[in-house]
Structure formats: C-alpha cells, structure tokens
Amino acid sequence: MHISDGVLPTQVALTCFALSAGCVAVSLKKTHSEDLPKVAVMTSAFFVASLVHVPLGPTSVHLLLPGLVGIFLGWSSFLAIFLGLVLQCLLFQFGGLTALGANGLMMGLPAWLAAAVFHGFRDASSRTRLLAGAVVSGGGVVVAALILAVLLATGGEDFAGVAKLALAAHVPVVVLEAVITGFVLAFVDRVKPELLGRSPWRSEAR
Amino acid sequence: MKGFLFRLSNVLLGALVVLAMLPVLNARAQGAAPLAGPTVGRTPETVQAADKQGKEDREVLAALEAQRREMNQELRQIKRELARLRASRDRVSLHDVVSGVGYIVGLFGVAAFVASRKNASKSPGGTADDAP
Image (cartoon, rainbow over all chains, first blue to last red; front, side, top):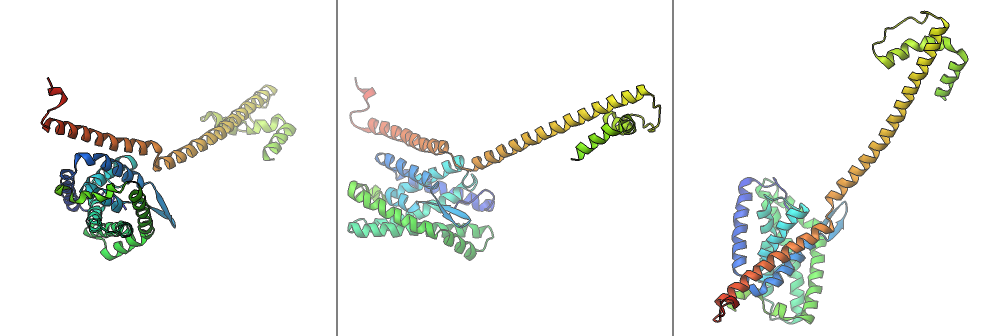
C-alpha cells in the first residue's frame, strides 16, 4: 500500500507534504530523549516489516504495522513511520519520493489513531488490553486503506472502488497484524509491562 | 544431409561443376566480382584455380557459420544473465535491509547523543567539560 510517483495531482502531493511535515514536527516535539532507543527499535521494525510478504493470488501484500508502532510509541509514531518510509523509498524503491508526504499521512495518521484508542485501554486488565491492541492494530490497516482511497479519489479515482479494492486486498494483512500485535502485547506484558504502562501518548503530562 | 549431397555432387562432377558455381561464389565472396559466363576459359589451369577458389569460399562460409553459432550461444548466455540481473534488481537484498536498520540506529544514536549533551548542560552541575 504505497502510492507511487505521479499518481497524485501536484497540489495534493504538496499539501500532503506540508501536512506530513507538520505532523513530523509535532511528533518530534513530543518525543522525549529517553524514549529514543524505543523509537529506533520500532522504526526498524516498521522498516523491515514491509519485507514480510503475504502471498495473495497472483500478487502479494506486505505487513504495515502502523497499529503496533502507534501502540508502542504514541506521539512519536509519526516520526518513526515517516523515517521508515523515507528509507524504504530510498533503499527498496517502495513508493515515490514525491508521494512521500501522502504515504506518511497514510501510515502515520492510523498510527496516531491507534495510539489514541489504545490509550483508553491502558488501565484495563491485560487480557482486555491485549484484545484491544489486536483490534486497534487491525483497524489501523483499515484506516490506512481508507486514507489511501481518499487520496486516490483526489486524483480522480472512484473512491468506493479503490476503497473496496484496497480493503479486499488487505484482509489477510488485517488479520495477520491483529494476531502479531496480540502476540507482541502478550510477550511484552509478561517480560516488560512498563513498556506499555507508561503510555507515551500522554507523555507531556509526565 | 543437404550439405553432404552438395559435397558429394561436387566430388562426382568435379571441376566443371565448380567452374559453373564460380561466378556465384565469387560474387558472394568479393561483392563486386564481374559476372562471367560459366563457359569462359575452361583450361585446366582455370579449372584448378576455380576449384581452389571454391574451396576457400566454402571454408570462409563454414567459418562464418561457426562464428555465428558461437555468437548466438554467447548472446543467449548474456540475455540469460541480463534477465537474472533484472530479477535480482527488483528483489530487496539483505544488504539494503541491514543498511536501512543501520541508518535508523545511527540517526537515533546521534539524536540521543545530542539530547544527552543538551540535558547535561542544562543540569546544575554542568557538563563534564565544564568541570574545573
């Protein structure tokens, strides 16, 4: 789910760049220096996750992980995802440089949304939290697909058609991401629960 | 089989046939050779010379054919190599993955370093460099 060069009209691409830059600035401002190692690890995870391909008929889709990144990083997730996208674009030729802003919004906003929703469950029992994390993670992919449809609709594509296609193509990814997030949360809950307990979403209150 | 029959007929019919073929072969081998009639000057010397000429022409043709075949094979090899290369270019290599992760870790490492210096200079004791 990457937008390539030349798909979006110039104004839309520029607007997306401006919005993305704003989001990165906000994300950067809210990132605390002591969280940097965590952000780095999640950025690497996001960067590499795109190489995990799920075969689907003649084509294949790959993991996106906006939900997982959002859950762990909160405000910092946009920064992490944008950096991951830049490197994916430069090293793997995923998506175009001119569409980087749009791709950043497409992956970053679902991450923030996931972080906000998951924050509501931070004090719940670990089982509920695990379930919420899985649902939020799957939902992140759905939101990303919808944002993709909105962005492509500005380029004259049929919104409903693109949305249907993108969602249908990413059903396995939604399921897989929910399962992966569930496993990761269960593991972190047992090994290092403070990684989730101190939610970075409300980091400015600390 | 065709080549064999061709050669056999040459052997059987001898110089006469070679002489008849001479203009054609000559024209092919030298391009602008004058097209002489098949019956021009059938002295033994000319017949012998024509025979020799024909043999040379055939040798050249055979060499060309062999070269063409060799070139064909090499070209096929290169095309295969090219296709392999193109396929590998689309695939992400481990090299790219590792370098990307390295970039991420490095960038955040620099950020953490800068942040730590800033924190240290803000703290009441100052940085280690400021210490007397």
